Length: 187
Image (cartoon, rainbow, N blue to C red; front, side, top):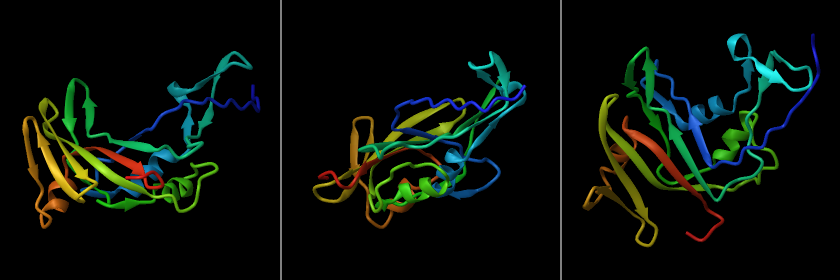
């Protein structure tokens, strides 16, 4: 049985969980976002339940943004499960430390409806997971918008990131959460 039935499910979120392929050593954030926005075929054991015909059927799932959020949190999936073992994926996801127009990338990946051209996002902070699949420690890097400097927050210690080392300290294989803020808001 085949039906031409479309169901739109609105799930508000400002979190993008981007898959990060483990077969590469380096990947751009653009590629992760385009992979996230790519249409997904629901088939086999992952068929969609059709409320119209009351059975599981093949379907295509599309992900898009209906509007640009003020804050955008990008979760880089750093862990994978193999049977009973959790492994950390240690490739580097390259992302800009300054301005980023993710909407252009997301739109090209089939995603953003009614997007506002030219809106850019500014990276505000990066959370890193230092450790392995069994455990570790979280450290946060935040940009002070007043003085335009980056700081590392490690438990009760706060230290300024030297400008010559900020790229290697912040953009590395431990980056886990990227927090952006839309630039049309006062920063």
